[in-house]
Image 1 (cartoon, one colour):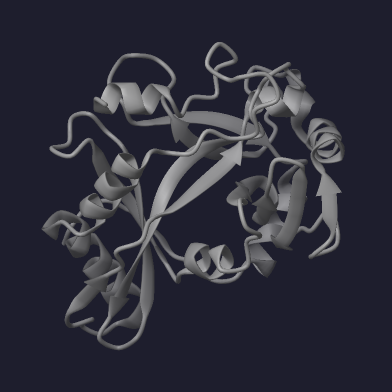
Image 2 (cartoon, rainbow, N blue to C red; image 1 turned 45 degrees about the vertical axis):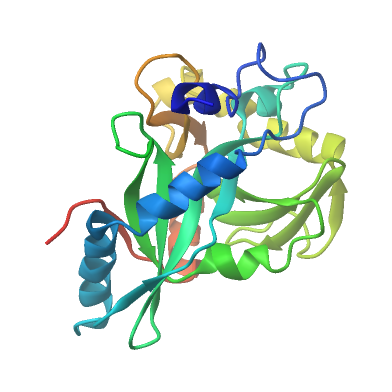
Length: 251
């Protein structure tokens, strides 16, 4: 399977999503390519830079995990209730990097057909939230991020379970059927998507990076789902566990 074909298989477009689909997982080949991208000298240099920034010490030798964790984010089509739209679309594959000191970073890999292996690390975050949360997933579930509330969910074909959030909308650990969750996110975001009057009037929101849906150059595609306003953003800033995000760029 070519990288372009593999990327197309991950897309949120209604034309590629079967009716009732909840996610389309990456192939084993794509996961392997993402993990390989996280182990390149380029990616490791990003991790070292972030370790130095956060810990103020040289991280020494960096060990990169051989496991990649697919991370999904809300599909705009699911939010608006489009028939057949998947609940989540692939945002990135998270790979944990560990320093000699024991500190951990998360390297996020995304498809890029300009890269030798078809995947590239675009940013690095402190901590290993994705790795830790993935151990709490039910069999057959995937990790879903709702960045507008800094929410992390166990997403399965029948519903979601909130694992943690800065602005929890449902109790942590409570199962919510997929149809109910769709209604919840519809109420939260359907009138705040890109191009909405809310956004045109200066509404504040977070950006989501998802896999590109066309046949052109692959890479992060920004789509917005907007939160309720500046107060919510401030609350998230005050309560979120510290994570330092650094765009790819070695020092």
